[in-house]
Image (cartoon, rainbow, N blue to C red; front, side, top):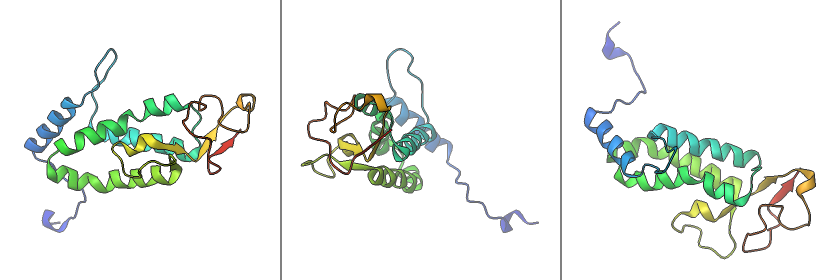
Length: 158
């Protein structure tokens, strides 16, 4: 079989593109004790895994969600530093995960839909809690610091 007759969907980056991706990731690397280096693949995988959790029903508190969103912030910081071909190749994947997150969340009331760091001003549509944690009909424990009443479209389930 002639290798020219085979088709592969695998995209091969040049050494220069790999180097540029590594350099971009180094610029936005998390600092502090226990910080670990991340690849573009790992950041996208972590963003997708968080969205999976939000789609199923987020079971942590509001400050924890804010902390978990670090991977999307890192992607936003690294994206403009990536080579244009890498961005073009990976943009559909990022867009798809973002669409899923938007579907699984609602925007904060009275906030612009497309503000900088838009992902931080959204609330999961489904919050999972332990039955003993629901103390009143508004926000469950860990979410009461939200600056607005719980929208009816945010479901609290046990």
